[in-house]
Amino acid sequence: MKSFRKELWFEVPSRRGFRNITPQVLDCLRESGIREGLVLCNAMHITASVFINDDESGLHQDFEQWLEELAPHAPISRYQHNNTGEDNGDAHLKRTIMGREVVVAVTAGKLDFGPWEQIFYGEFDGRRRKRVLVKIIGE
Amino acid sequence: MKSFRKELWFEVPSRRGFRNITPQVLDCLRESGIREGLVLCNAMHITASVFINDDESGLHQDFEQWLEELAPHAPISRYQHNNTGEDNGDAHLKRTIMGREVVVAVTAGKLDFGPWEQIFYGEFDGRRRKRVLVKIIGE
Amino acid sequence: MKSFRKELWFEVPSRRGFRNITPQVLDCLRESGIREGLVLCNAMHITASVFINDDESGLHQDFEQWLEELAPHAPISRYQHNNTGEDNGDAHLKRTIMGREVVVAVTAGKLDFGPWEQIFYGEFDGRRRKRVLVKIIGE
Image (cartoon, rainbow over all chains, first blue to last red; front, side, top):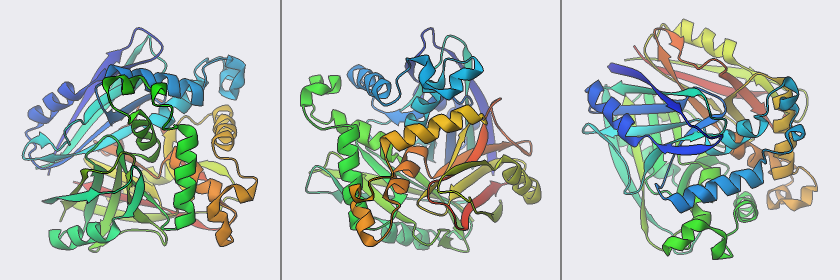
């Protein structure tokens, strides 16, 4: 069994944003030399997500608006967590909806994806450097 | 390390519906000959889910009603994504709540499940043929 | 390829509650002797979750309140599932939001975590003994 590990770093300049990280994950897969196995791709921070969906800007606006309805940022006092001096209580909830991680099959050296699947980093408390872990196991 | 891959195809005749796919995943596991490892089972489409819960029809009605409250289908104009000519903006959000994938342990050649765990395909934009990927790695 | 399996048992004395189970998962990892691979950690019950977030009590209160808003426990009659004689319809939905499972990378014999990641058991229908599965594969 082979294994491969790499951290991807991001600094989203606004509080929230989505980045298509499929090219970077593909680079990891090529570098690993693994042909059959599994890729785990997870946010290493608890106010960010890794998820799979469509690379369509209207959809990303829908996600942004929907998450803000389900877990509004303001008022800050809405969240007990913000009593610690943070203002990111909502970001923990938004990331919970979008998910921490994805697991993707590797088949014949490729990400075994349907036609529209793309991997995204979802940032909910940005304006600082944060990391995604890519771990690949297989042969 | 052994690996196994199969696509399961579904055509749900209505827009939304749930299918218990545990028997098909078990067939894959038997066919793979793998006794210890992990099964990844994921929707290959971004408006469908694979999830684990109870095979109880009342619960499935609750899921249907709850998802429609959290991410209503209509009005279509509610979603930017539908400006592309689609009417499935809600389906992307519903699938996000229910999840893209499950990872299940394989122990002694069986799905290592608690008493009520069953695997479901969740369709949110049906009336066409769509796929689930089953990937198994182990020994 | 090595594999390791253990069940962790919990009895939360109230209907709902969160437990940090990172120490028990670490014990499993040490016992397994696996240095590179993946840990799957999942609730074996369909009214409970395993998730990763911050070990901060204010945040846990926020989760509790937020889940109760998204999927209220009462009135019991709100859920078709409760027509079976259960009163835990809400617990199935709350667990869906929080997730069934996490997959964590194992690197150099450690859980490959960001600075604040901790693994939690989330109970939504407690007051009885319930299980979490820890399955580790690797080398």
